[in-house]
Each structure stands twice: as structure tokens, then as C-alpha cells.
Amino acid sequence: MIIRNTPVRPPQTSGTASAPARPVTPPVRNQVKDSFSAGTAATQRTAAVTAAPPGDHGKLMNEYLTGARPPPADFEQVMGYKPYAIQTPHGQRMQDPHGYASVPGKIGPDKEFDKAAKTHDYGYDLLRYYDRKGTPLKPEARKAADAMFRKDMFDYANDQKGAMDRFKFRAWAQVYATAVELNSVRQGNGPP
Image 1 (cartoon, rainbow, N blue to C red):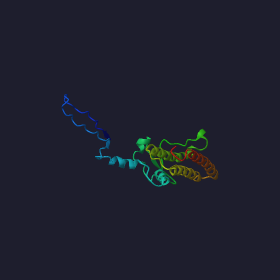
Image 2 (cartoon, rainbow, N blue to C red):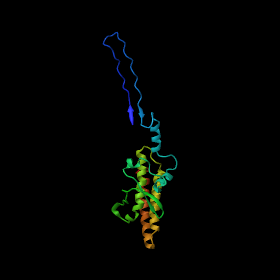
Image 3 (tube, rainbow, N blue to C red):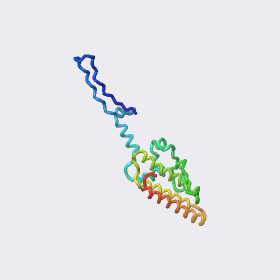
């Protein structure tokens, strides 16, 4: 992108008082130019693409987390990683390769909920991404990421073979999901 600004030139004189001064060229307004157009229209199109789409941001978040919608074009550049897809017994999920279940004190079965946590981390990074772009997603987006986290943990718990394992993982899923949801409320359901 090139920004051009033509400076104002002082009047030129020939050294004598009787010589007429050359006219002063008025300054040109700053114009943003790019290699795709002769004006600013392409810049405006780019801004529209990187802005949060209008509509239901909860649905938007679900589309991102399930892979129905690809990550924003510059997500990798802005956030520093490329999300990847995995297939679970309950559908496709997009993952943050650096994500993990971060449980204070490492209590409970955090490793078992790692896949759910990596998807949840990607959701929170989408919230951060749109916030950095200056168009934060609505609170419904964070609520949807938290709801997907809860669902994925309970799906894992309900898939266990033994009754005791199902009970144990359901209990921990409830603890983890409630903690995450309370933290979201504390942060106003905005970007973390």
C-alpha cells in the first residue's frame, strides 16, 4: 500500500521584487492506493472482508468450530497458527494446534478433554482475532464457543463404556464447563 502526500511548495522568485511568483500548488489529500486499483475501493472491500460478518454470531462461531466456514483469510498471519480439522464421533471440529486443557492445579481428567479444549481455544482465538481487527463479535459468539465446549465434553463422557466412567467424566465435564461459563460471564462474554 502506498500513501502519497504532495507537499506545498513555497513560491519561487527570481530574486527581484518585480518578478511574479510561481503559483503555489495546493496539497493533494492523502489517498490510499493499492496494486489492485487506482483508488480506495479495494481497501474498502478488504475492510469488509476482515470485518465481523453481520448476523447471528453464535451461528457464525459454530460454523467456524465445525469447519463449515473456513478461518478468515488472514487468521494465520494475525494469530500465528493455522487451525486444523479432526473428525470426532460427533462431527468435525477445528483445533488450535497449541491449545490444551488448562486446569488450575491440573485437577481432574484434563487430558481426556484435550480435544474439546483445543476446539474451545480456537473459538476464543476467533474472538481475539475479530477484536484485533476492530470488529468484535457479539456475546453470542463466546456463548456458542462455551456451549460447544460443554457439548464436546459431555459427548466424550457419554461415550464411555462403563457406568462409573460415564458418571466420573460427566461430573468433571460439569465442573469444567461451569467454570468456563462463569469466567465468560465475569468477562462480559467478550473477547478473553
